[in-house]
Length: 91
Image (tube, rainbow, N blue to C red):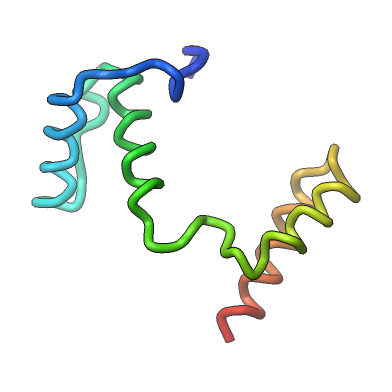
């Protein structure tokens, strides 16, 4: 992925809808055959926007941000802390 700004550039609506139909009918899409990184990014963007809850649940956002501020140069600590918090929240 050497393309910059993939979420800032628009892609073909028809291509995104075609990929979406593939995902809806088969649970998968042939992304390698698409060849359009902008359309793949557009499909991911649609998926993320339509999720019922954010990737980082609202109840965990403050802890995630606090950990990030404490260890801004160590994403492993931030991810590990978030994973531990998510496991605790799921119980």
